[in-house]
Image 1 (cartoon, helix red, strand yellow):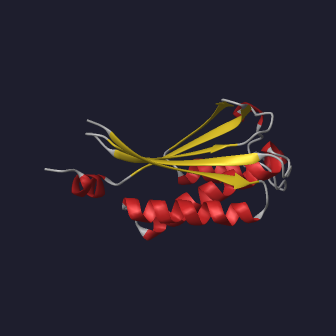
Image 2: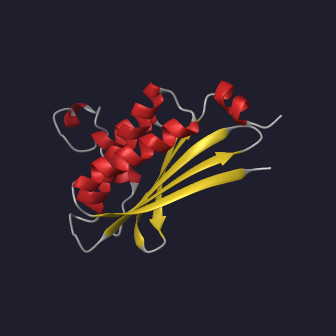
Length: 153
């Protein structure tokens, strides 16, 4: 039987929301059982995702919001943390994002956030948000040893 813990926060489209999102997700990850290194990686991934929602999604429009949803899904086979960032922009297609490691893009500053999110998280996808915009979904599994300790015997 699966159980899910869920936490939602609506962030303003201001640069300070980037730090707030990172802090909230790091606390959630730590409380969920991730070690210090993983907490840092998850925090960086959410930081990059929030920067993208602020800059590219909502285009720094203070009238728009960023929804941050944190879920801890405890299932028989694993426990995973799912992070959703939803902006109110026009959305985007991952295939349109240039590869930051391609020679022609090595000196460009854009595209690195998606690269870091992919590197730090186990799973990453983007879909159309329910109100338009982009919904970025990032998943990180707890190590099996932590998952086993969390399960009731």
